[in-house]
Image 1 (cartoon, helix red, strand yellow):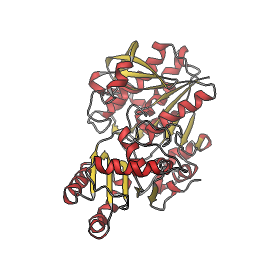
Image 2 (cartoon, helix red, strand yellow):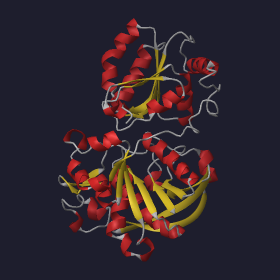
Image 3 (tube, helix red, strand yellow):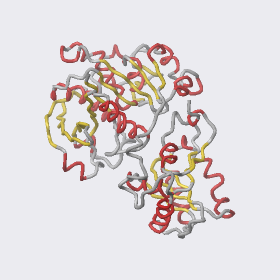
Length: 406
């Protein structure tokens, strides 16, 4: 069996959230079962130069974006026994962030068709294409509606995984023709239309042969109006092929006894290395080096969903009354980025913020922390708290379904 993972982000190359962790870990587990597995993703300029130097151009293809045809280079990298294919387009993927651009609808319309064209160019006749979240949802749709009419694609099945239903990829209806190259017959309630717009996630859901999500609990919640984000009816129609599979982490990748990114190794029996890592990170960020002061960390997207408003209500008071340190690593909405910059300035001995993402640094922070703060307003199935536990940091979370392991 051959399986292709089509994703917008993947550890260790780029990461904004838990999707990247799953995309990095699951292919390796399938490969251990003897399944031929490959991963396909954009070649972002944000990918570290060490990885980019090792990529080898393997093929190329033309991709239709509306009425235009765009060139796409296909580069290959073997890493940890998995084949990774990077789709190269300078204009679409040479950006300072993964998402949040005015032309995201066009970028991921290109990505969707590029994945299918690249399969043919590589002669990779996948049995299953496994796509993740709205960025890749239209792969499932154009495969079903268009590409399966061609002999090469006829027997390919598709799986669509929902990591977070809040982010759906909603764009003006003109995207049907101008970006995806489909005729207006696809803009109906039964197909891509969504309250007067086009919805890429809806396209993935309705076209996939199987739909999965990140926990059995979230699977049930998505069918309710409160959590369904106006897609509960669409999901109910797919209930027979909808499955919740509990997320996990790669316990080889996240291993404080062998992690190459941390300064001192340790395990549950010998924790002396954790104490030393705490001193290193305190010194690195200019915090007072004191093992008795609780070091609390956040490694997160800085968005409303992650409960940053709850922190804003109490943090100033806590810093005035409690002996504690807070270390924040993340990027997101400007309001929250600027808030932590301000708190760093106001309480230089208590708060430090690294606005951005840095995978090696995140490991150092996990390894140094006493507590891991994750007050999400909702969480489909968080991974940050699982990584924190692996590194011996106690998660402090809100009581809500995503943290109830079932």
